[in-house]
Image (tube, rainbow, N blue to C red; front, side, top):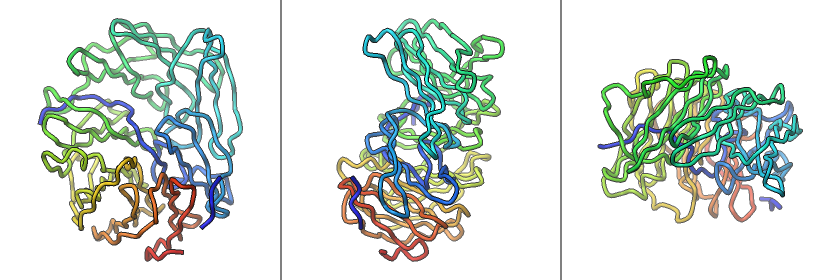
Length: 383
């Protein structure tokens, strides 16, 4: 080791997560964003919008760091936005994830919060809102200028943008923790009248805990926790068809802290999603097209790790055969072909990141104390 310096609410909200998977920044899963000839492991130890640190899996050293911000779903582009010292302007920066090269920097009048990135990283959505009014600015990072300015009555939050930048998905907040998912047609500059709703679902209540987006820009997948029913489910949003769906996960009523330990991992082909939870001893395999759980595999439960952000502590091989996951300390491996779980493999401390090394021959975990631990991917043997 080397030291490194069932009542739900239909809503998709970016939620806290702690680590990145397989050499790509949140929210991508399963593909690599590293430059040719190398493999980087990206970690956001302070949460989904915290600073992004890239580690070399070859040298086990930090290579570069980017300021707090958001990455595109394809893992190639990163945006940051922060107020200038006078707080009269917002400085927007666009970065290349593989090299940390700055691709642009602009000043936007007023104070804005970065809320969404299009899947390809071309457009960024910034917002400022109150309970009665919301302003949203869609910025074109390729042309370096404002593309759209929206002013909406009500309390809206940006969910994401479509791949072509023509549609904006929003969360409309109401009193009493009520929400709607809305779609805004940017090509016609109008909010569609009817909210998006899942088939067979009238009203839902809960809150988003973590999420993952497909690199091709089709799916936005969010883990939801229902506080009244103590249930967990995945809310899938098909961005191409503007169609949401809810898929219930194996849950135990009264075990809310354990439900938080679910991690979501998207298969490389984009048709399957794996939800793993060591605290419940379960891995659920979801068919996204059919919006159903296809298989549930069980293994020995483990106690939750206090203070660990386990939401995205998972990674999958490029061929989609083996997934590694954690609840914040030990690692497990899941064989996607046979539905078999093996492990645990001890890391020796709390971890904040996990990913495959070059050639998918090793799996590496970045610990909170600054050490990187390596395992042989095929067997889980400590290297």
